[in-house]
Image 1 (cartoon, rainbow, N blue to C red):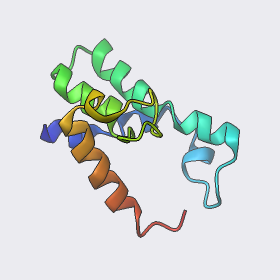
Image 2: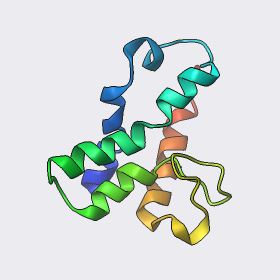
Image 3: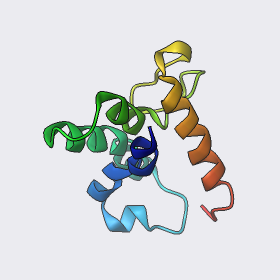
Length: 100
């Protein structure tokens, strides 16, 4: 579980730096680019046959919300693994003081 929390944003290595570091609000195209980073992180770990499926699930689901408004799969309620939910809460808490 700890590895999943540590690696949750691994897919951001595939995001263009000018999008990742943009100080202003992201436009729609930039948001679409950002919103695939959970899937990209999952694929990196899967292709490397690294860690467990549980860890890969945390990486994939940390931006899913119980109301279905999250990404990348718009999962709802019990479709989201409990560790994905916990990581998502921690991720939101971590982002609160950010200037974006």
